[in-house]
Image (cartoon, rainbow, N blue to C red; front, side):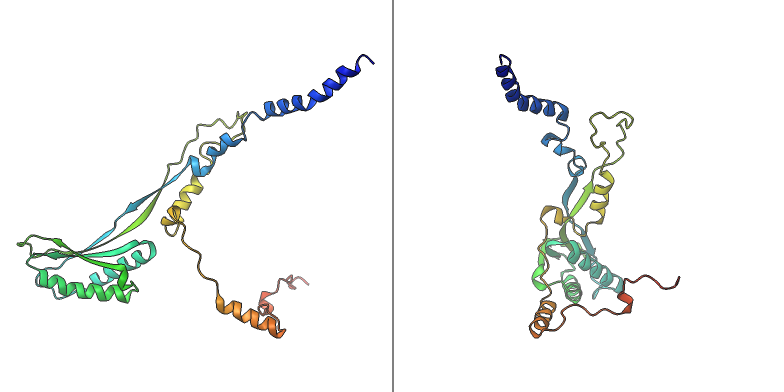
Length: 234
């Protein structure tokens, strides 16, 4: 009976001892302090603003865009619609000897942008001061976009034969981060994700209408959609 108090004390201290034992085994390798070992932290993708420009010559003898220049303006408009943020700026020369010619070329540029689906309110028309003696001052198109730059890969410093901490090597996830930076449609999504596209209201209305009529709402399937096993071997 004299040993009962000691036994009870040992039982009470057992959970505390187990907690210290588990903490000691864990070693902190998988705790919150290891969160910065994730690929997005080890191999971050930097996103910076860039301003692509297109220079369209406007010499005094010119009456409008050439076919090649029209294609270049169209390609520039397509790139703007894909990755542009903010307005597409069209800057014309002011005070130069070719001001009248530049305005004629500007008409063709405006028409080309409209034909390629660039909204009128998305284009900002400005002017810049050019030398009075300059008879070839160009028209300059520009817009702002985001560019993603991944971090460099190739850190093979870890000894794979000895890793008691059992953590990810420094090069882990670098290739995936680099591929993501190259394949993303618009690096601006890394800064501010775009809104979701609206749902297909036509399909929803059709399904609801069939449901109310007691009709089958599933899409019709034909023999090519079957998942049956091929009968060639039978």
